Length: 243
Image 1 (cartoon, rainbow, N blue to C red):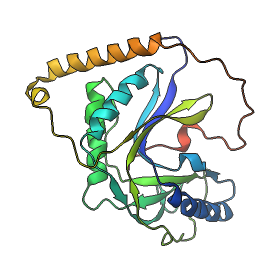
Image 2: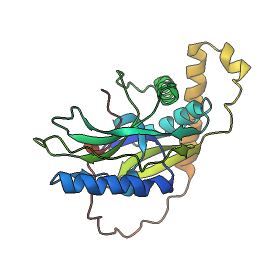
Image 3: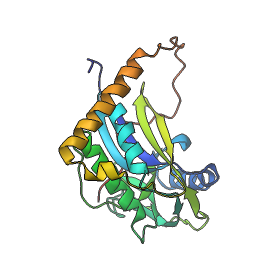
Image 4: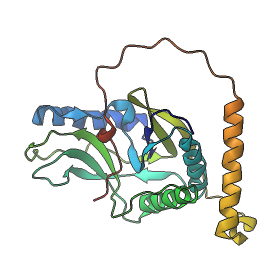
């Protein structure tokens, strides 16, 4: 590990570009209805699954490996939308989010798989009830109930990629993306016969090998720092809230 400050990260399902415009239209309605609303930037409109919290940057190597293992169990999803709601309550919302249909529990199952694989890499993550959603905006404390927002212009889309997003230099940026396969991979017979202890040991060896390879790579030339974007996003502005 290093003495650098921890960075924040989370794992999400990417959204196709064609749905982003519809979500941005809803954001414009939120901005008109709630003064001071902090909109999630377009490039971060996604469905968060697991909030990793603040970690040493090297730890995200383990998160990538855990994400790869969890992706084996999932195929592309159809993402349908059921409405727009305020969280934690409609009467005093702090977050506005589009709710995603999960009648058969596929998104919840993928989140559980991520939690399970991350735990094998030593991640301690909070549990509790969870509903799939797409955060649109943060609201200031004291904001009253918003008018009903129409979500019917959002047509179902396919989600076929998991992304690990990491906060770097004050802004969240994608770190690694993994496409979901056409069908789940057949479990490795040797792995299924392993005890949890031997599996953890093999995982640790994989991580050590990965870190060693990364440390051997030449570092890119330092780029000239650009001016920050007008619209920034805080660590609290996007996450996978529990209910």
